Length: 373
Image 1 (cartoon, rainbow, N blue to C red):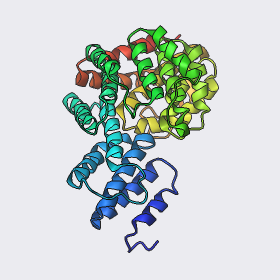
Image 2: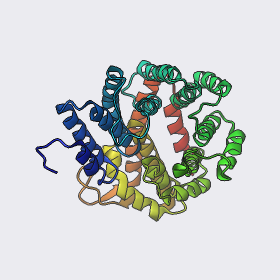
Image 3: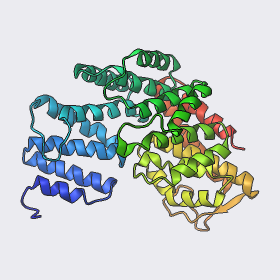
Image 4: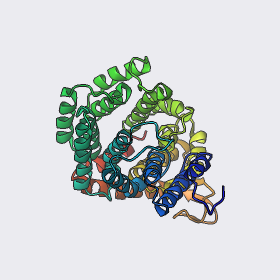
């Protein structure tokens, strides 16, 4: 393609040849800039949709909080915009889907004030119901948000509202079941969670999109993996980790490497260390604070368990000079690495709890760390 001639279709074909992730997201962002320069409204909208979806599933999600408001503004300004040949769904429905992800995931960034998170949720609810949908989906996102924030009172209110709503036309039984599982586990109602999990295991409840029908199973395993590690059940955690490690999905959420590493500390310590060596640098560079919290928490627990397992005070790891504890001998005290990650997780937890007005994150960290065998 001649770089001097604007060709939106060529830009699409070009970035779709790239693997999912940062490089592809950057290429989509460049395509959006080119559409802006040429005042090509349909592609200004389309490329922003593509960028948000790529960021949600494969790349750096925080970037959508800059791009999505632009997308929303464009679709409000041009409500009758024509779709491009690459858009098969209604633009309104696609934007609403992205809005839901923006709303529920805003809680993952302590940089976003609590009032703004709530405004995202309420804004999504207003637009979703105005489009003729049941309020079921917005309340589903709301109770998930409040669970993660540690606000049990509002989580219970929204869960009750969710359960009382008629089933929405866009509701996915597999996703809804997983949300309920997470709610029940965090509310201390494991039997109810296990009952729903069994229906997912048996294929009774699954994602309605046949192409992504395995998502419900993978989401469920990730939820239980986190739960088992928090409660010190490393035998069951390792079983969940094995399934997640060997799934064929490209979605980043279904390969939670920090949790997998931590789960393997007793059953497969060698494999766990390989995972650590492969991923430690990306955890250092992680921009999503909730993901960094989980990575640091899991690393702290992994090295605490490894220290007990090895019966030695030191470990040899060839870090690069960018690692904060780097030394040229490549020999490190296990207790020192454990402390580094624990303090890092503790700092992030404090920021989340301050934003949310709860103690949920620090309690989760303390509980998980205490439950390392």
